[in-house]
Image (tube, rainbow, N blue to C red):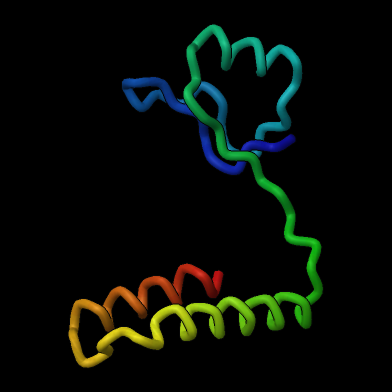
Length: 89
């Protein structure tokens, strides 16, 4: 496992930088420092075609969910845009 983000303490001091390949010793350090969470990098192994298909399916689902919504309402339109953006990644 490789850290996607640095692990910092409550004072924002980094004690494990992003890109660190975690070992058993690192995991013990995380426990001792009471780490609440860590971000692990996981490579996306999908092809470009699979990604495009997944984005299209997610976008269609968002459109379906918002179909009954009043898209003339600026707040609803902003929410739709944010959900669509989130689901497209």
